[in-house]
Image 1 (cartoon, rainbow, N blue to C red):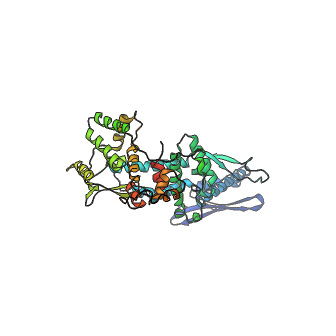
Image 2 (cartoon, rainbow, N blue to C red; image 1 turned 90 degrees about the vertical axis):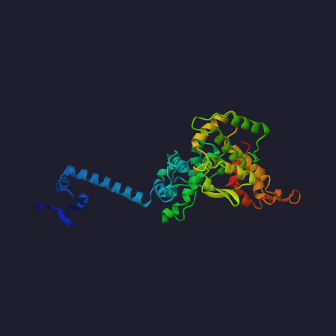
Image 3 (cartoon, helix red, strand yellow; image 1 turned 120 degrees about the vertical axis):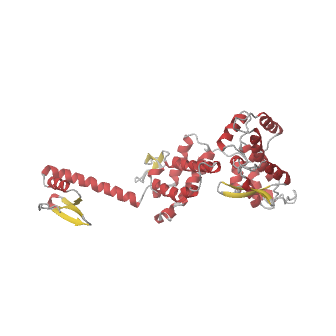
Length: 422
């Protein structure tokens, strides 16, 4: 056991088999109050000597002041962490578990993992986009319209309680200045709102926090421009001829199949499947009693019912020794599609839009809410007044059944994404 010479203001502490060296000084007249512990004897002696030296004493005081400030900063950080710390916990609790079972070697799983990357990228862009953050204005004699203290910062460095609706408005302006489209900005804000709603579950101290991503100024997203009135999208005969010609003249790569290219587009047009749903379709999703395809996509489940002709076509695509109907990868099909359709003005979503428009024509007046969205009416009353003028169509009896068939749970989403002039 080591022995140390007795030294004034130095105390030897033995605890849990370890030796500590405590420097304790209380010189009120000199403004020097120290209680600091070291694990190294020589460091403790050097510190003690500095405290007993006139020049060293000033350096010690400065050191202790800096140390106290650092401790205070650390304490404040732990008590009220910035939003970037909550994001780490949100990803750990809610994002990673959702995708933990997926295997990147499987095409369908690999596509979903890219969706995860896209989701995280959106959150990070929102949190790390530079914007103007308003600080407190104590000069109440001046209007905030004329004078307002502000600083450039990012959401990631702010505490949740410091983020206001005005900050979200300024963030939208910054995103708009980056030439992001209104629909992209809406997606960004929506993802942030979902994240924000989880904050009270991550920290009980935030149980009463408001959600500024719901109360922002929505006019800022489209820069004050009115939205186009919604109307059904339909292929005209010339567009359909263009599609047929492209499919007929499609020259696949060595590892592709021209029939697969045609059949995928057929499923998108005739059944309204999203392109990844069609490309990654597996035979275990196809059922014969009653004939239907089970789809699980975008966190939703839906059933696409098939008539006899559609069912025969889908069954003809099944390969006995392969689980998937097509060999295409999503990105590979995207490349082939863009190259083939680049001069037509037709994108992959056009086929699904046309399908949904055809569905809407069948739903009847009883689905007045959705029809009002499609036709651009502010309320469904004008539609409902037409009851009796147009015959009811009971092929799809309720609006809910239609929305489930289309694959969205709300008429707003369906109308905004699938009925537009563009």
